[in-house]
Image (cartoon, rainbow, N blue to C red; front, side):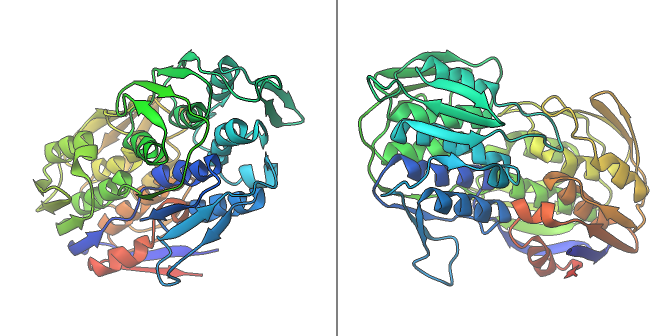
Length: 424
């Protein structure tokens, strides 16, 4: 099992290029199931989660081609023949995003059998809103032996448009229902829809495929269903969470970096908090220049749905607060178990206490290197940031979590001058 070993205390300097967004790529890959024509994708990140999704799609019958073997970010997907409408437990248990095949399979093939995702380290993340929405569109759904078994009305053989108000904002729920609605008969209205840029990126691809969608970027999506979608070409948006992670890294470790190929407008809440922490930033159309001299200032924040501060950046900014001057409170409102990195940060010398869904961090002048263990994807990133700021050697174990969402993170950090290496 791989680990990351680093010697902290070295400021970061140089340029870093941001990869495509994992949370946009995964639903976009599933969208290929909606057409029998090829879908050409670019800027797809080379991540473990992406490879898992491609394996699942291949089991379903999708052919995956890489036109340029030297460029894994360029893919051509073809779902001309669907040989199975099932996503097995063996696949879904490794990645909850596999549930995203449910909507497109049901809409195009009129039936689907998808394993329930099961537990998750950072919270329950139930799929009841997916099921509620598909039932409103006329699907017959039963839970049998741990599987969601769904089929359309055998008389009409299509889902039908419906007005759907979800009980909570759900990103994957919005994406599943959005894809399902593109081939439904009639108009579907999704109220309380997630506004995340990754949802908008999926919608933009669907429009290129012929879908009729209005309200993109808002919490009210209107989809006029059509009978058939066609192929398209699309480039995945840059990963705002990766960009935010590198900004937090320089805020904690010091130095000056240029973050290239990003979309700063998707990071407004993160940028505002990091400016409050003392990170100096110059923002361009697709780049951010950031520098930190001295110690950051502690900043309090609360996670919430986009465009508020993202839960996927909570752990990284907590690592900055760990070495900041002053005390801060961090309130997590999205996932109930997303403070598991606190114990590991404290092993590095941080002073963080948990009270319910709030963490209270008293910044310390210096962290000390130690062996720590990653518990989830973003926790991994927070431990790397803390290790870069700590004195001495830090080892981060179980970095397969990190590989799920960051493309060659240690290589990018090495280019910025960090003393970091992957070890077996």
